Image 1 (tube, one colour):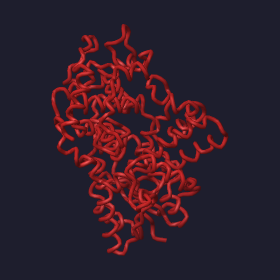
Image 2: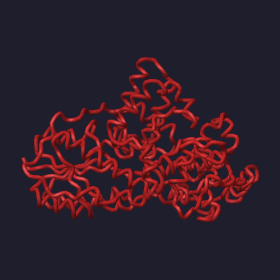
Image 3: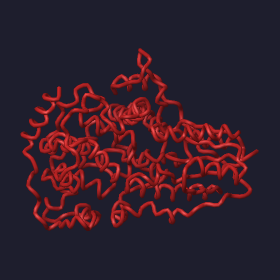
Length: 469
């Protein structure tokens, strides 16, 4: 009956948490732990703030069940060794992650603990299936999404497990640091209060969002999801990235919609988007370089620019292209960005501005509360053309025509770009309260002229592609 240390990371939930369910069944005392190592303290400002908010809610959830969340800072291995010594724990369990840095850290932890006679186990739960559970006919990993989707849907997704009815606790708890002392939101400065209005933190909020989505919007999801001016998506990405809701639970709840023969096309497409997230983790597991380098090596010679003044105007939402600027400002105000806008702003940076996708990837890492290393890397490389796509570079989004098609009444652009409205709304003005003071932005300033001619910018990108071939 030695205690078990449960090392929580991106799995801040009780429901469908395979690690937690298996641990509770043992009857052994459970010591939930969160460690602020480099994977937490070294990420972007918005993601770090959001992790702090998630930990605050999850710690309260455990307290409501008579347990605690022990907080420690430092290297994961050293911290876990200390906790084992302090508590007499006989095992350390955790949920798996799939990016290169996490896998290297976890392998070292597992090897060292086992060498010391401590049980070390890892569990599934962050994705629908494990990245190695589907293979091509040749036995390798998938490089194209469509056959990956077919393989995943044919294999099926395991049913979720319920939250434990009881959490056995130790007779004495190890010391815990105070979450407030970590100051995880310090780098957000005044922007934290703005983003906090839009973040919906914790499992209860995530489940409420899922309920609301499946109660209606899912029916029209296949078409309406591309229109950022209406509430047509689940907005669950911020909860998925910290594991506040289980992807398997979402999958099975959505499957019930299909069984009811309601909103069939919308529900099926929603499942495909959920599987796209799995595809990102499939790729980062099998090709870890996707997070830092061109997935297609032939793109190493493409003449992208590194960071530049044009990219700075892009970051500040001052390109003169309303759809692009609305997306960039939405990210600063809400901590997230509509998926259609993400594709448009990424295409504009990498193609019309001929700037390296890594510049955009780093900015998203700093500004997104739903930042995920796998999804962020796949999204940027797919749009830039250097990633897994059958016909990558000929897709150059025109932000003006995209706005006409997907934001015909300009609701999205007016919501976030104050200079376009006679009487700007709360979100449009909030942008100027959230940005760094050093930017000296004024909502009363005239809206800038477009940075580049869209037709000329597109042709320049295509010419560069032809020369690089």
